Image 1 (cartoon, rainbow, N blue to C red):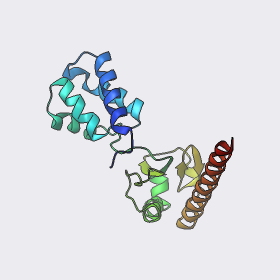
Image 2 (tube, rainbow, N blue to C red):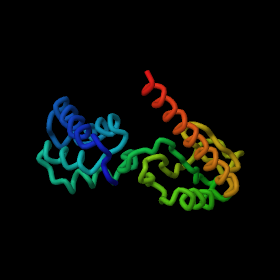
Image 3 (tube, helix red, strand yellow):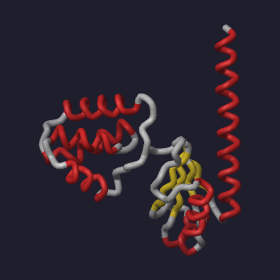
Image 4 (cartoon, rainbow, N blue to C red):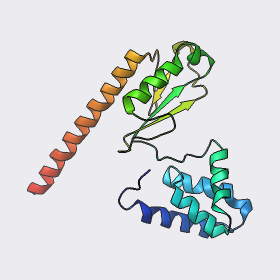
Length: 179
């Protein structure tokens, strides 16, 4: 994924800070990765390269650990995070079809973030709302009975929110320019 303006500097500063707070041993690799992800929201390739340099470890080893554990995220989270439940009840009620519907609408695959970083799409094992299957969690809001038609409604609401937010930001910019 392409880095956004100013992000390279933020990544470098974050890795430098985290490496400075920890002893530079391979035993600290996982805690270092966790701390960097906590600060950045994900583990960009540049961060993993710099961590490898800082620990004097092969970059492939750092990447291997980051991809082995599912706690690590290699793509930045979107402004709106959509998580589709694929636990047994949701899967049986069509959760996989719901996931495919989101993939088509967002034009990304599960585990990815849209290029504009507005949406990210992930699967989860269970949300704990089996009676509402299939379930989707949008940001922190649980959406039950998420059929493909419901996916269209969820996406429409998110797009309307995006347009309204854009209008508000441009109006605020015009007001501040008049002062």
